[in-house]
Image (tube, rainbow, N blue to C red; front, side, top):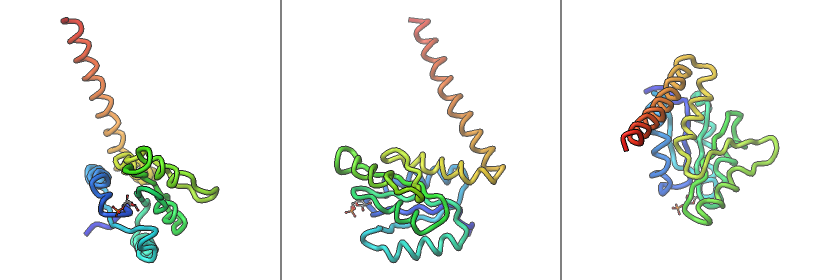
Length: 167
Ligand code: RP5
């Protein structure tokens, strides 16, 4: 089995439908990951053990997702010197405002790089970008990813322009 380079934690199995997108995105870049369910409130000891073991196994970036009083990413950031990306999840107050603030409002010295509410895909992209700093192959893949996005937008623009010209 490949050594994991990213660890994905989420507060509940009910978070899985959103967080699958992070796993799929890492799969797309060929980045091996480890994924688990580990609540900061319901299973703090398990989270602590998982973070310690996963860090020992060589993971470079943690992604942590939770909803409501979303302290998981912050708790993980307190346990590791690796970068932590937080994904606030929607589902409760004001479309996820509760989890957004709980994830992003970290005290000085312990940052959580917080993506948009339900931003699982961007969390994975950011994790790949962090790893790509010291990985030329991943950096090439990221450049290709950016080019594909630009090509797709330009194709839509050309299609629209052609449609309007023919109208
Ligand atoms: C959070 O509480 C979890 O991350 C989840 O988003 C939310 C609800 O959890 P369940 O009651 O569905 O297990 O800790």
